[in-house]
Length: 102
Image 1 (cartoon, rainbow, N blue to C red):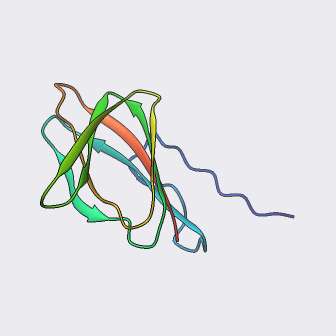
Image 2 (image 1 turned 90 degrees about the vertical axis):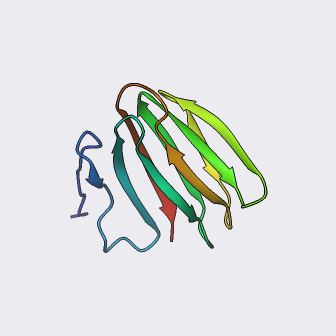
């Protein structure tokens, strides 16, 4: 019988087991003013899906940054080699999910 792992996005933390070979992902909650600081997708692709609230997805480098607001139900797809960070600039908690390829 096939083995299926069930997890809830409602709990912050890992959604995909560390033994997964092609994906990794987490459920993230950010309080107002909190951020997941600058990092690169390196060789991976990444999808961000906002469940609750809104976040600012900031993409760029030291010379130029582009910010886009992602609200509930919206997604963003990031190609490999993209420097970015996610910031909660709103007045309520934000909850989002990211999934990356490995």
